[in-house]
Amino acid sequence: MLLKNSIIPAKTLILRSIHIYHSSANQKINLNIQFITTPMKHVFNVIILSLLPFLSFAQDLEFTLPISVSDGANTTNITVAVSPNGSSTSFVEGLDQLAPPAPPDGAFDARMKVNGTSYFTKYFDNALTAKTATFEYSASTGNGPITLTWDQSALDIVGTFTITDTFTGSFFTQSMNDLNGSYTIPNPGLIQSSFNLVFTPSGNVPDPIAETPVFFSKWWNLPR
Image (cartoon, rainbow, N blue to C red):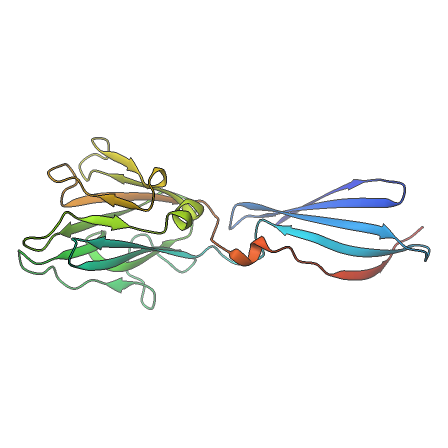
């Protein structure tokens, strides 16, 4: 954690802005601290006005993003997640949820594969680097098309997510950040049965508490 101070002198008011850089989240936290003079000499009432952009900067990055896969009659939730204890290559006991073997032809199926292993929930490492998972799906007989839905506001906060073809990744590309929380798989098409999800965490997490400023005061004796 790096700490940087800048002091702006004033006649009866000193403003000190503290910038804290949290390396694990790759974020800079701004603390605006106001020192206000009182009738007592050398005594200042210290009020922390705000803590932005979030309060939990000391915690390691972790989030989950459920993506619902449906054929109109059946639905499976596939959860993409990151954790300091996650792995982008192998199964993590206590975090990941494995998917069962694929059902017979004609049945609905949806799963996510990483290194050939099928998951309903996969926790990747929380490094701010690109990660890839392969989504595979099939509609049950007489149903379809396959539709994906997710929380768009949460997705936009936690990272960049791109749907690509499973061949080279260059024949088909669709940014999920440019959508409105849903996407219907084109059929026929290059991704009618599978696609690669390529995502990069931003270092941010949805945190409604962080939108509320924190106020507290403390008496502080400063030298003349």
